Length: 429
Ligand code: NAD
Ligand code: UGA
Image 1 (cartoon, rainbow, N blue to C red):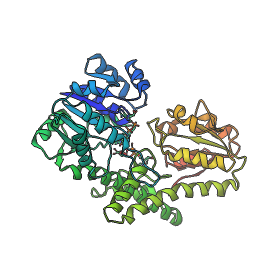
Image 2 (cartoon, rainbow, N blue to C red):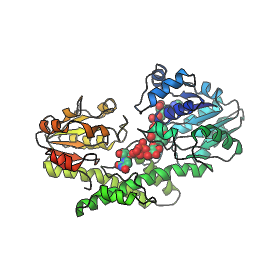
Image 3 (tube, rainbow, N blue to C red):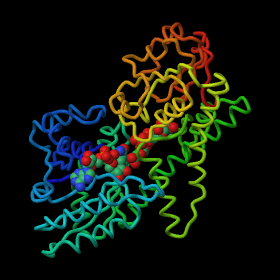
Image 4 (cartoon, rainbow, N blue to C red):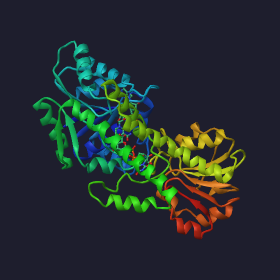
């Protein structure tokens, strides 16, 4: 099938590539001409394991191409996916101006029936607004269907998540759109749940909020573990063995970050508020998450007494492992806070240095993980990159001024680190 994807970022680019991989003809659109130029030249603007090879393969096979022209892409495609940003506004509500702008643009170039699919994460009832907008600006009266098809991929494993999804959700009210969407997703062999438009939109916000809730829950439990001498890893293992609970997303740490959980939680709280429900539970989830970073900083302050002029090495800047994405990264927030207090920070990340650099003036970015430790009063693990498990910890210990090691992601083995001579502390164990 011929598909257009409007917005070629983390979601649009990976989704478009995976659609091409299963045999569809895909045109990815972006209004960032530089990005399109890069993609056409075979350079990939994001780091995502497995993506580069897949893009090259599908471009070479003639199934994947890039353009800045929405008109060209829509003329050639029966189905048009929208994957543009839905960033937060200062009051927590969602900025829907990108979606609205794209809806108007689509309306202006429609000449024949099209299925317009929203893949961006949006508040419930946005699909209805998209349909109204297209109707208003679609002067030729062309028929179309609007579908909500939320995306559940995780950065860092986006290709695998898309190729082998747990479920496909789409919301629509017409049989024609249901048939077309089912056909698109058939090659993925995943369970398909068809709902109304509003339910599909809600499934996305409710899912992300629930996952964030699991993280805050285990982080609260971690605080109890610290106070009682229990081990949060064992507690999570014991809880997770119950299939009704599950072990996933029970990793205690310095809190969730990224371009999605923080914004989607505040959006869901705001949406619920607008609909007359005060979602206090989710407000607590946010509160615990903020507190997690603060508790960690407090531990560092307690050990170092004052941060001013202390040399601190930071491992990890991305918001999680396996990505170069630094949007709303807790690691970055942590570094900024320590710099504000006068600490001298040296930091390293396997993939996110380029994106982090402009956000961290005054921070020395090192070429290797080991180099953050030179003369350091403390070293912090801030991102759960598995690469950090295998760095030369002996060398790090030798390079440090004092052997304080704070593991904000429970990545390392406490016994091993203690045996190496570190004064090691982590979260909830
Ligand atoms: P992104 O910023 O990486 O990509 C968005 C792209 O859209 C950018 O390349 C931008 O230039 C382009 N764009 C903006 N306006 C445009 C227009 N008018 N025409 C053409 N292109 C335009 O964003 P993302 O991370 O891919 O997120 C997109 C949406 O998907 C958001 O709603 C997000 O919440 C949701 N989502 C993201 C993830 C994720 O892991 N990043 C996962 C699931 C859902
Ligand atoms: C998340 C969801 O997992 C995806 O299903 C969803 O599609 C996506 O948001 C989205 O809507 O954009 P993502 O943000 O890419 O995906 O990454 P996650 O693996 O969910 O991690 C989010 C944050 O939670 C990271 O900062 C990570 O360090 C933290 N986390 C995750 C924990 O602290 N503990 C855990 O157990 C799991």
